[in-house]
Length: 322
Ligand code: SF4
Image 1 (cartoon, rainbow, N blue to C red):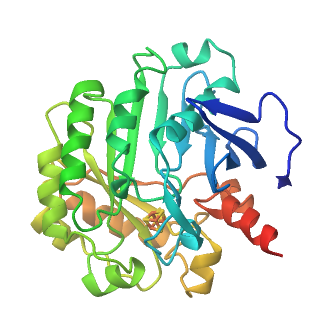
Image 2 (image 1 turned 90 degrees about the vertical axis):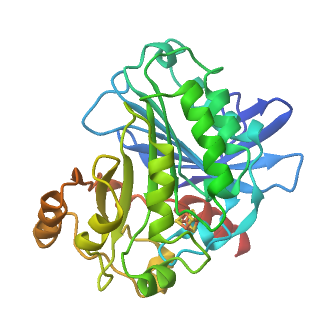
């Protein structure tokens, strides 16, 4: 981790009057560069964003920008370092500023010519708690006319997400038909396990099924139900099949990424990325139930360099407190 980088033209950004400076950068070329930034002229709040690649592709073929929607997160999931702090929502201009900063770090032509440019609203923060996220999705189109621009949003569906989701759907219909990825982070089919992992008021599985069906229109990418598989946490494909339509929903299984918060909470992954044999039967059960199912393992080096959500910002905040 490099910290306190000297101010230079590329690490101070002004977007519609809001400026931030990059205070730390971590990462490994070819996977993900994680930037920790501090807003300037305000309360000096910290956030992070990622300039990422899918290790199987060159940047020209696939480029993934992942931005924060909140300064930390108030929801306190037991496996996530973003909940280390919470200092409010990130304004529209600062969300766009994160994207603009990453785009400007590379050749100007790339944002137009990249064959799959994906902007994820999935770093620090719960997007459904920030009412400016649907507007940010709409504003993405002002940044590039690349026809292969995708928008991706991951949410835990906190209680009362309905009206936000309605606005998100409008933005998707207007700007990203067929190029939008929505993920519901479900994590368990057992409500007592879910409420332990995600200790806040959230929409139940029945409501999630209803919301996904409302959001989805023909030609869209299916809504992903994500389970970050933790040891001892129940995931029952039968229960999912009873509530969710495989024509609308797909399943994404991931290991539980190692984080400080997860360790402090006594959580560990149900499987290690190097050996996924113990979850193969779960994958098959979901497939037998009719769901497209992916086992998404990611690049192990992301764990080694601590580039999981909230880790870099937590490290900066912890060091500042010393
Ligand atoms: S997983 Fe998402 S909702 Fe939960 S604490 Fe982290 S950022 Fe917040």
